Image (tube, rainbow, N blue to C red):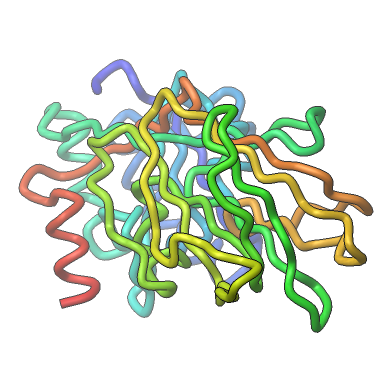
Length: 266
């Protein structure tokens, strides 16, 4: 880690938080780190806030493959992506200098909308109806039609995203060391005409998932990319695959993904 010395802090700019960060920046500089104002010059990107801030940091800096990401929470926040808080920032710097820190790699999914625009997601992509009417989606695994879904929507989550929106729909929590993605239903309608699996299912890294939206008047669904909404007038289909990209994050030893899941939920 000793060659990673340029730090960029990602946070919502306000004077209160800027003042709180002042001791952290001074401490970093005392440990021979350089604070940069442009994230393109950084090789360590640190988000300030919970998981939402971390997701925004990754998205706004372009899912960079040549740097490390980490998250720092404030005293009243928690996050599965964040190993540190404002009170143990010195511990983080000490670990980085002495190479006591481990690097974990989180899978990313790629989402193509209407066969054109392509996006990366670290948490999940969701598609939901925006009107008081169920949405109908033909679900294809590779080139095989698997089911016709009718309900409020679908969530496609990465392993790390499995603890978020996906978990609230009774989806499984997946170990991020497994390269895969998970599909979960939102209030599916099952009857003689529409029949779905009725549970989440997991696809391997080599699978391609295609969601064809049936154009029956519900043609303007909301697409959620991590914690951002994607605005487009007409959504016809989504294609989801596991990306070759991974997000490299730093963590303390003896603080595994499952340690944090236990702390958060149990």
